Every structure is written in structure tokens, then in C-alpha cells.
Image (cartoon, rainbow, N blue to C red; front, side, top):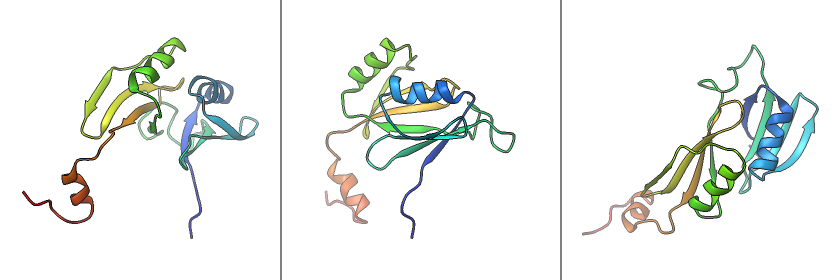
Length: 136
């Protein structure tokens, strides 16, 4: 039934948003309709829709305007270094069982989480996801 969709981010300036998501983050612009709508391909089936600010929706950068989690294909250290060179402020790296994470924001202050997926999933988590518990 459902064949696709997108995560929508409300933006205050379409040109700045498109530049950030394509030139800074390196995502591919898939379409743009002036200042009315644009989409970027974030890979692995994730499409990000960029929507101009409107009184009907949360203001850009405010609660409810969106948070994106973007899986990265390089180390978290490499990703944060590249983005820092491009003027993005990174909120530090956090490591946990699922991988390594770093927080940043788009030009409107919308939160973005960068995620370096853990290389291996513990056996106990695999068993849990299959509805089983692992034996001791």
C-alpha cells in the first residue's frame, strides 16, 4: 500500500536549507519547486522534504519541527571533522551499545543526529529482536 514518503523539515530559507543539506552534508537534491518544496536523498530509502515556514506548522527549529537521525558511512570522528571544517558546530561524540552519535543542527536550529552504527550487534539483542531470550 505505502510505497514511500519523507521526513519533512520546516525551514526559514529554502536556498540556505538546500545548500546545507546538499553542499555541507553532501546529500543529493532530487527535486525542487522554487521556494515551495524540495527533497534530498539521504540514502537507504530516506528522503528529506524541505518545506517553507508556514503558520500551519511548527516554526523552523522549534519543538515538533523535526529531528533527523542520519546514518553515516565513515567514522564519527571523520564525519564530525568534515562538518566542523564546513562551519557546523558539533555537540560532542557519545558512544553506546548501538554505536557512536554526534549532535548538530541545520541552519534553522533543527536537530540532527549523526549515527555511526555499531559494527556488531550483541547476541542478546539479536535474540531479543527475534522474540527469544538468549540462554546463559
